Amino acid sequence: MNKVIRTIKLTTAAAAFSVTTAHAEDVEVLHWWTSGGEAAALNVLKQDLETQGIGWQDMPVAGGGGTEAMTVLRARVTAGDPPTAVQALGFDILDWGNQGALANLNDLAAQEGWDEVVPEALQFFAKVDGKWISAPVNVHSTNWVWANKSVLDANGIAVPETWEDFVAAVETLKAAGITPIAHGGQAWQDATVFDAVAMSAGGPEFYKAAFIDLDEETLGSDTMKEAFDRMTFIRDNVDDNFSGRDWNLATAMVINGEAGFQMMGDWAKGEFLNAGKVPGEDFLCFRFPGTQDQVTFNADQFMMFDQGGTVSQEQAALASAILSPSFQIAFNKVKGSVPARTDVDGSELDACGQQGMKDLAAAASSGNLFGSMAHGHAAPASVKNAVYDVVTAHFNGEYDSETAVLELVDAVSIAK
Ligand code: BGC
Image (cartoon, rainbow, N blue to C red; front, side):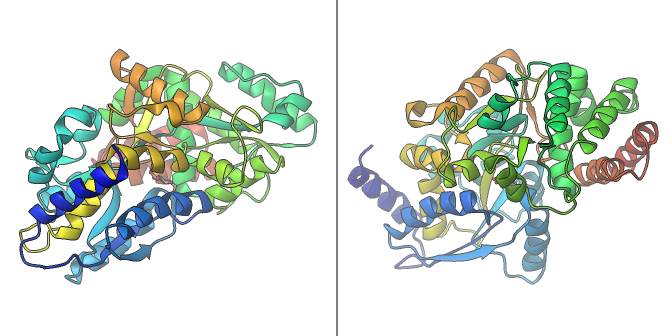
């Protein structure tokens, strides 16, 4: 759709919701997009709204995965002062929706046909009692590996297909004096790696039984111990300064050739692109070995807080802008994610983005698409945080794999 037509469409959508105000207020947006790549993507949204005359009050809360942002949000809501719109993930959205805190976007959704174009896996987290309560921005996934191509080439390493290949590649890099794995030791990053490692160790049924169904036997199984053992191998192959490092600084280690691999969601691609790097030439993206047919996803959405029973003009404009096909492409190209609509043409995306779209569609149709535990799409926050605690304590050597399994069973059963 060309820009003029889209602007008219947005203005009309916004006007339909303009009940009490003659002109739109600024939007105040709480989010955790503070890295270089994330900020570049956010600018696409800010600029889109600016062209509609809607100002932007930025409320960034640093901290990947959004844990800190959710804490700040609770304080704002408790103080009776929720922001206009808030970046949120999966079960957190459902939580706020079930509390009746969010605006009902159904009129806008019906007018723009969201039901027909947003995949069901995302609608599950965007609606409560049949009401649209948030606007999906994208689909990310966590089972990716990012690699420095010249480092791999110089060491004769091909893209690893299996866990054993990966172990061999890591040993080769270690022997060559290169940090094999770039990692930031923060609970959410440990958990992000664990998403993929567990899927690889046990396969899709195991992942689902453990993290979505929260089945006690699976959580306490030998396969879970194997997953923790693999985490120990990863811990043994990160550099000495990993503790507390931000994820984007770990990405920078791969970008600069200080490290070979990073296991991270596809927001990492945003950092490579922001540094002017080209997929296939400077860096490689591939699914974590052993999870080539699976996708563990998370989708960023903007929840709109209820502002007295009506959807404000600026909330409608923001939601409408987010769901528009041209924005979906423009934004996700920069962010590293793929569109939250099934009807947009992905040919403008780079090779990793196109693979991401293809993998997502294939995983959805073969029953291999699963919510990410680390990013709030497998289980509610209480369970997610319990898993974080155990994975992180084990990663940091507080206990061995056998104990970690027992701790996991206990922690999940208390939290659920
Ligand atoms: C979000 C991404 C974000 C990443 C790191 C994830 O939870 O979905 O949009 O880039 O955290 O901050």
